Image (tube, rainbow, N blue to C red; front, side, top):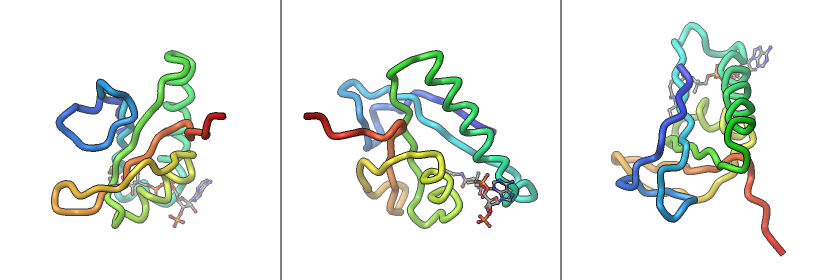
Length: 103
Ligand SMILES: CC(C)(COP(=O)(O)OP(=O)(O)OC[C@H]1O[C@@H](n2cnc3c(N)ncnc32)[C@H](O)[C@@H]1OP(=O)(O)O)[C@@H](O)C(=O)NCCC(=O)NCCS
């Protein structure tokens, strides 16, 4: 399952003042891990999104302890915005495409 849902204002972690950014989620059955399927499916969804809504960022939040999810975020080109505590664990919050410093 690949999801793109608006990120609720009640959560920490935002790149837009009014929240509601598109948040990427990924959930595959364990027997489908380790073949690159999630990376391929997420990349397709991200490029579809970039074409449908040009210039709109996609955000992603995952536990730092989730090694596979962290590796996938990096592979897709998400860059870290901040880390915070939620659900009793450290969360990694990133954005795609990568934010480049202006000026
Ligand atoms: C997060 C999740 C989607 C990652 O799945 P994944 O299969 O590890 O991710 P990828 O599609 O990037 O596959 C990468 C692996 O495929 C391997 N692979 C094998 N053949 C490949 C190919 N042809 N191309 C690319 N990668 C390939 C890579 O080497 C890598 O293996 P490794 O992790 O042992 O180094 C999966 O672990 C999951 O569903 N977890 C539960 C839900 C969850 O935690 N979601 C995140 C919550 S925010």
